[in-house]
Length: 137
Image (cartoon, rainbow, N blue to C red; front, side, top):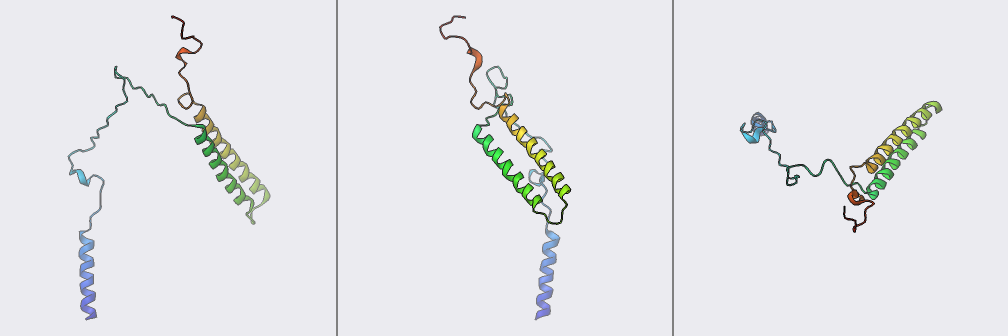
């Protein structure tokens, strides 16, 4: 009985394995689209020009959250380096210095992203800056 069950289970397993197929990403289109992808861009004004031009919204709250996340992450990394018992003082200082350099670089990139002219958060329309509404120009 055990032998028959073992042989039957082995036969079922081998059959299942032999008919298993690799799921390739292009299997579902049956070769009809062959790399043709359709992209629709509805970001155009009446003349057909794109009106977004790479702008984004990055608020001060998001900036502060990213900065605190970066500081928290690097503080944890620096504490783990400080707590390593079998590492020399000079090696610890070198690693901490490199971590501080990386942290400062990430902080600079977040601040630059916030101050970038493409960031539309809290910007005003400057077309009429310095002009009174009553001026007829």
